[in-house]
Length: 182
Image (cartoon, rainbow, N blue to C red):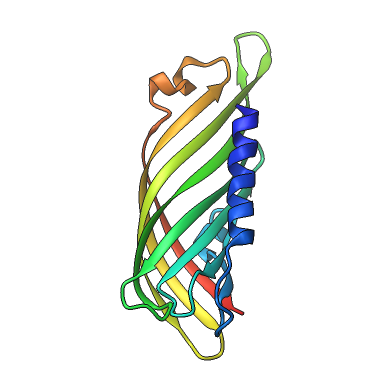
């Protein structure tokens, strides 16, 4: 499974690096999602338009969450199509995300405290719908909503975390991509 994760990650990064867009206007952007900061989740995305007309885009979302006993990291790849072109207005598309989550928690077994470790690898194919506003100074804002279905693997001792017991299912997300284009 670790080899599959590495191959998927390297394919996403290599694909984003090798994509070549015409050098007209601002083709790249880096965005942050302030919604995540409310919950101590650091998230953002890198995007690149695939043509000078701004009709298609690939973007690489990522996040990291480090709480007291939960660590979660994720990366993905999305393909967006802009209805009216120009890199603004209504966009839609799809993609895939890969998440790695570890959870360490203590519980009282009746005589002493024990530590339990849980670990999930989650793959989520998803669809996305949003709208992008752009300004001449390079700033953009692109709120979007996404929905998908998770498929996960589980490594731990509890039966409730096993995918057969409901660890997979429908997923959704909100994004408020505040970005700077360059």
